[in-house]
Image (cartoon, rainbow, N blue to C red; front, side):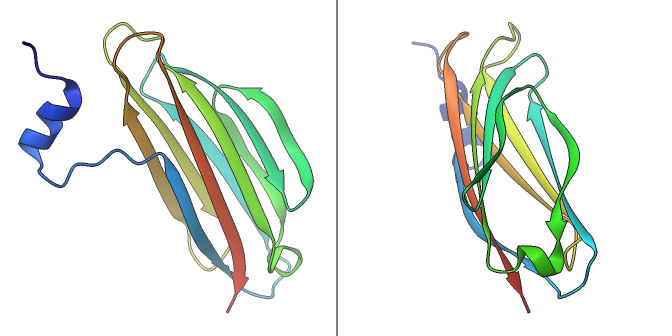
Length: 138
């Protein structure tokens, strides 16, 4: 019986675990500097649809593919707010079953990048990535 990609990854790295959820805090200051968000979909050839809610406002709905860097608001305006990101990545690449979402935030206290990933069983399967990020002023 053939080994799955996940079992092979576990053989190489015993601590390997797929990561499909994120619940974290992004540190900001009280400035008027813009905080930006960028979402990169991978592995190459995978397709995706993303919805983003900032507090109670649906700011992105049904966006296909990666999302170029765009402003969310100033550090001061974002304090205490949460952003909710839901992305469905579908394996449409023939050469791999890896699905991935990279979330990049800039403009707060530091640049940060979060990576979510899952190995699906076969071509055409989907992975759902969910993220909640709270903006916190220190």
